[in-house]
Image (cartoon, rainbow, N blue to C red; front, top):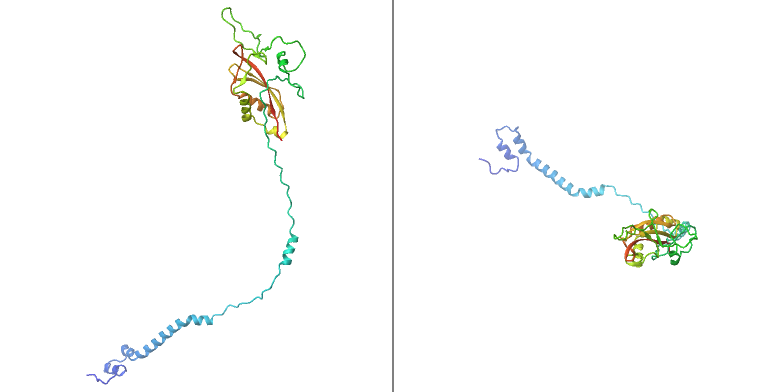
Length: 282
């Protein structure tokens, strides 16, 4: 039986337990030194715990502090500096404003009825209606006998302009070209002079080359109003060049149908002469 007076917390009970046994066995050695091992373990673990808690404070005290160098503030007066900068700045160059180009406006005129024959640099005054009735259209003006008739034939034709027909079959077709005064009703643009002016304003263009060269003046155009009101045989009697002549002919050629001239109620071919004015307005 075990002695009840033995203290189990001391090594005496180990002697009793390991009596008559091999005490060199590891179990006896561990049990005999258990108190010392527990004390060391408790001390080491406590030390590590305390070190872990206070390590930030220790690191903060042991780490080197940043050296702060205080620079004394220097007061700088900018009055003199700003004044010097103003003296060094060059004055901006004043560039003249470009002149605005004057707007170009195309001017057209109403339908003229005078026949104009130009063969000189300076344009002579157009002939009157009475002169036209007594003369034949030509490329030059000359003295001569009064024309017996105001009817002229096409230069390309070979006949005398009179129709041929057998008795009882009526008169032949009238292919003559009449000039001013040789017809009862003169051809007219559909809608009258105002409609013609609107047509010219919408379609006539001032050539850019003529504007650059400052070419101004009148382009005299001659054309034939056919029996159906169409326009044929367009030509320039007197021009100013720089594309104005071609522009005038182009606008005349694409003109809508006119009201044809009539002689005794029958449509006839009539030669028409017109002056188109190219003018740059200031």
